[in-house]
Length: 83
Image (tube, rainbow, N blue to C red; front, top):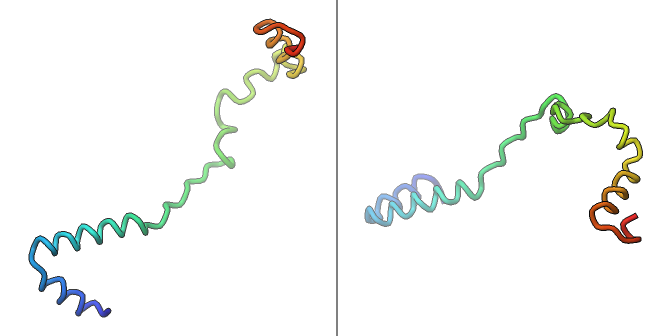
């Protein structure tokens, strides 16, 4: 359908129906909106810039993290499966 004909058809409708057409167009625009481009930071996710990254790197208890987890599970839940 050509734009001039669509405009003529719209103008021929009563005001309430014209309002419905405009609302429907607004609805369609939201459904077919292009996604916004994601903002990239210096690092891939920006996570490496966070202060908490590496905060436990010098903690002697976590040199063997698997052993640390087993110890924590045993102290919290006990039992042979927790070790």
